[in-house]
Each structure stands twice: as structure tokens, then as C-alpha cells.
Length: 169
Image (cartoon, rainbow, N blue to C red; front, side, top):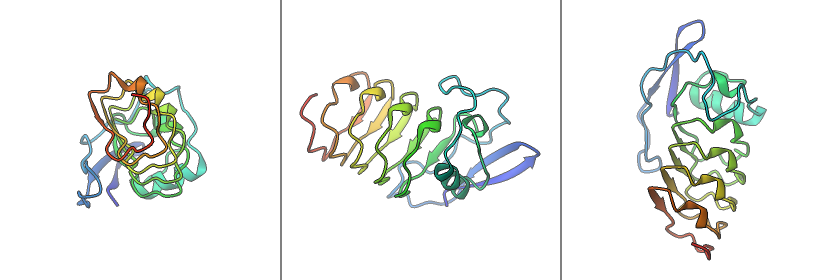
């Protein structure tokens, strides 16, 4: 697992990166210790419920349970690569760096427009990326379902390697 939680007191969580397979995940560290969150992130409505399946995956990866987006550490770097059953990422729109490579069941990424760096390599069921124009760094390599990237002109770093379906730039 890439992250492990250490409970410093009742509701404070500090995340630490553990050694990871850097060939699969481009980022393997967190932003450091996070203080307990007093308010939800600006980009996500207050306390967006996290679906049961996503919640179970987050618990396995982070080591603690989060029922709503408000309970996630602010400015979190999170890798959920190879979570083949991950479908709902709607509560993760405030995560700083989100790595979802090879999440082959993922289809809807419309809530992720405020993520700073988003890695969606080989997420072949993703089709609509029009809401991701404000992402600074976006990896869509191998996303064969994507056809229109015209809304991504403001993305600073865009990887479209092996995006064989792209017809509108």
C-alpha cells in the first residue's frame, strides 16, 4: 500500500508515503503531515458522501475510514492505480494529485476539474474529459475512448500518447 495512516489524536491524520513501485506510479509521496480539516475544500461541496465501494478502497489505501470528502486530508496526493473496480470518484475533486492509472471501470471524471495533477493512463472507458480544462497536469495516455480534447487547451502538461480515438483537438 502506498499510504499508511498514523493517528496523532482523535481526528487528526498524518499521511506518510511508503516505498512504492515508481514505475507504475509517477508520484509516491504525500504533501507531508496534514492538520485536521476544519472546513471542506473550496472545490468540493461541503461533506460530499463517499460511495461505499470508493470508501472501502480509500480505507484500504489510506488506513482510515472517510465517510465524506470533508474528512479527507486537504491537498492530498493519492494513488488509486490498479483499482479495477473503482467507479465513483466524485468526492475526490479536491485532491491535489490523483493517480488513477489502470482504473479500467472508471467512466465519469467530470468532478475532477479542480485536481492539480491527474493521471488517467489506460482508463479506457473514460470518454468525456471536457470538465478537465483547469487541471494543470493531465495524463490521458492510452485512454482510447477519448475523442475530443478541444476543451483542454489551458492544461499546462497534457499527455495524449496512444490516444488513438482523438479526432478533435
